[in-house]
Length: 182
Image 1 (tube, helix red, strand yellow):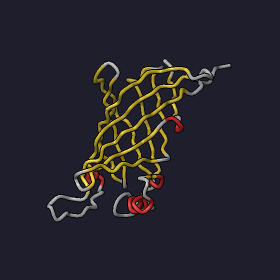
Image 2 (cartoon, one colour; image 1 turned 135 degrees about the vertical axis):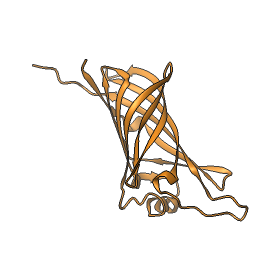
Image 3 (spheres, helix red, strand yellow; image 1 turned 180 degrees about the vertical axis):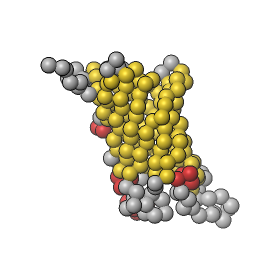
Image 4 (cartoon, helix red, strand yellow; image 1 turned 180 degrees about the horizontal axis):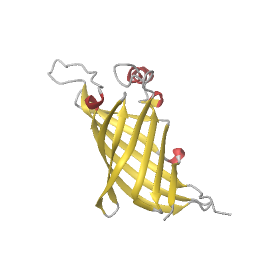
């Protein structure tokens, strides 16, 4: 069976995160520049090999001062580590159209295993005949696992930022044309 290559449609995809602030509300952010590639055996997404990168300098929380702080050494240290990377290591079915995507997330030069929940939304053809597949990805990581420890203690005894970061993504993948032997 031939491998099928899939590439991200960045105009119809998004990568976001949420973190508790002052332990009472969430602050949301996103990465404007990210890239996903996927290879499958035929069109069997259970066989997917996924590669993902995000430009850490493209972080946006709708506050430029906060974004600059997130890019500096207290958080991502984007001057020294400009990209976040993920490479899949395996997929486990978890329901009819649900999977657990296992992989290694590298951030600030540290690689750690992560498990992400993936909901497969189906495949369709766009008006130009190109096949597209949709996925919703969610998960949680502990930022301290990657050496992102900046925080401050509140006078009430809590902390300004939670260690847990919730990840959410919508990925629309486009089937790439395959070369036809002459």
